[in-house]
Image (cartoon, rainbow, N blue to C red; front, side, top):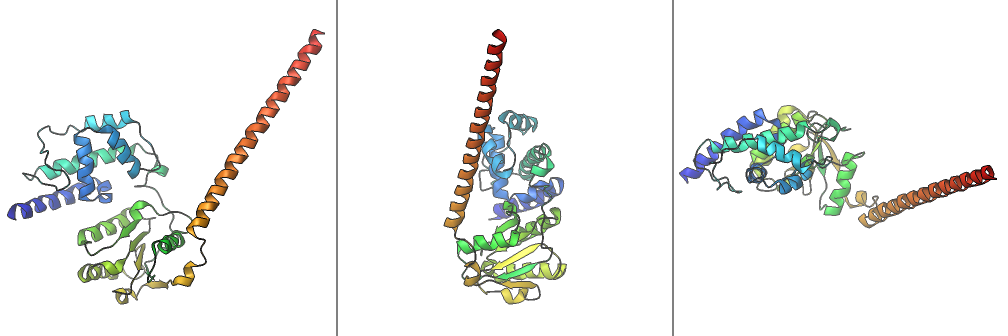
Length: 296
């Protein structure tokens, strides 16, 4: 037990320092960092290509480019191989080596992406600028989908803007969200199922919001049950009931509409190609007629 406590201390200290040096690390939890480090350390480039494609969905990287970054990291060969997803280490240097290696990798990748395609620096337009407490009792997954579409209106939320709360949510995760909100001014973060937080964590979240003020912070606090919502009544609030969701088209209708638009687009392209072929064919016929006249 003492070893685990000491190990936890190593990781907390190293993570705090590394996130100050590499700000992109605030977008990754320790488990994700360990997974990414494992791929980097073992030089599994094909897997890295897939992993990076998830983190940076708007941009694609060549295998050779990622290979070049991995080769430049100079990770010590004697670094413990027992890291896995548990974070087991044998000294206080390993966490820093792991975090700095991943931080440098993500930083180099991010620097080579155009700003408009980089989710870590994308100036996201957010219409709402103040925190909002939302009551959506007995909200189904489908209704939650509609609610998020409504909240983000003209765009889809980024993956890091959505946080699903649970009884296992920690203060560290809450602090990470607060840091993200400070780093990406245009983003708006939705905390879903705030009612599932333990009393102490929900109280910590509420106090953090009160400290900022009722008009400060780009957060949506979504309660799917009334548990704990009374503390958030000082914020601007909305209430959603079943009839509010009935005005939205069903997912089947949305899918059908998308397919129809896609088919119309394909049909339009086919028609355009057909017209171009007809045009060039007529031009060729005209040229042949001119050549025939000249020969005569």
